[in-house]
Length: 194
Image (cartoon, rainbow, N blue to C red; front, side, top):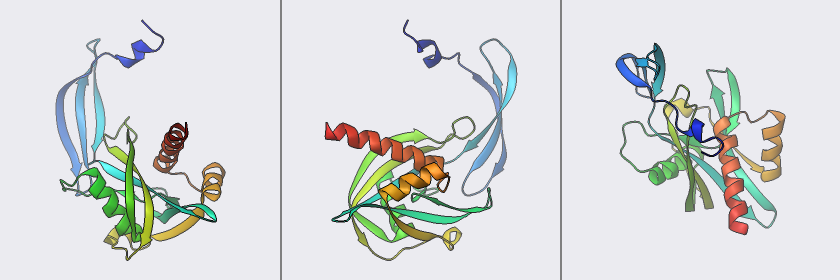
């Protein structure tokens, strides 16, 4: 058995019962009664959300590479914060590529000639079962945005890659999804250059 293989095969946890605690159009919160492999029972709170998409809008010019970010007031932390465009279409059966293109257009007005799926990650899987599909958007052209009512205060920012990376380190960008997506992009890009 190799190093770390034990952690890849944890004992299964059985669901004994489940009840919905709360629901709105964006999420559902449930409380599950569980039983661990040793027979001990407990409670597990789970937030159910539909998969989302995050888009890295990358513009390459003679002056360098630039990224498009959005900022909006995030009620839970009571701050206006910057992040990559991202979101989900509740109740839609649209595929991730369609949702990614739609979120990019809705939030920024940008259209992409090329969308590349880089990875699919889980967001905060200790309590949330939401997957997030990461896309790189290139060949950008500006159009009109089509924001949801919840996005009326959204602002678009064009920053250089160097500025973006500095913001990751100085605490300007604290969105873990944006930071993780950028890490995935950097690994993807490095492997393509080999």
